[in-house]
Image 1 (tube, rainbow, N blue to C red):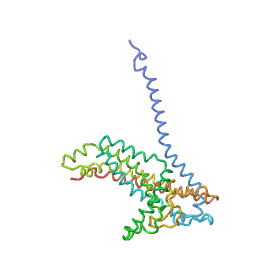
Image 2: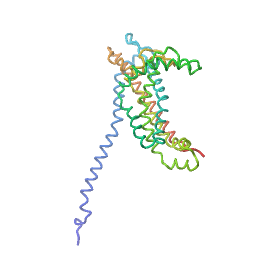
Image 3: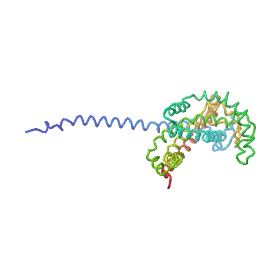
Image 4: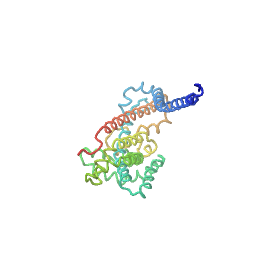
Length: 328
């Protein structure tokens, strides 16, 4: 007669308990890793709020509604910094996103295999170039080119057009918000292109084959099946590029002019972004309120970035719920 202790299942108990302990330990570790990013965001926000409180309590709501920035008289208004950030980021997105998505479509749908990887590698190489290199190139090459050729052309041919012409008024000086936007377009291009390429390549072949089976051309297949299926991921990549444009500092600081306090629709005006304002003035903050005001600009940048990224997530969610192909 066999006893219970001699049964094979009785000898698996300790091993199973060790596996349970290992699973629980692994779950605890990965949970801690997942909790770390939100804790970092909360910690950064609290730090910025505490350090910026003297300036916010001193200036009140006028800190984000006025453009008076006079540290001598303790007047701080950052509206023109917010405007410069939004304007240059918008220019960068308008110029960079179509090029990036077009490059991604070429690499995923048209490029031969022998050309695909080298071109993709060169596009992604743009992402690893330090921003100071972009800034030097923009200062010594792009700004003179914009001042001598591009901006006079835009002013002569687009300036007289109603509404649109307001973007191209004033003297062409080269170091302005348009040049900063061009730099940002180049810098966000590899991020958008790399993500869009992977998203487009991940579209199931059945989507393409279904359209081709209906007699569609290559372009009709891309427009009717590939892009609708991939649009959620592409928009997500565009928003990641926009996030980088918001926070870019050195390259923008070297080409934006860092001079004007006016809020004007003209892209030829020199200006500031929130990041460039912090870089320029952080070492000059010689009083508690002045230092607090500079930190408050960082807090506003964090809030604006959070709002834009939240809106982007909502947009991606709504687009992803829409139709995933061409309606026949």
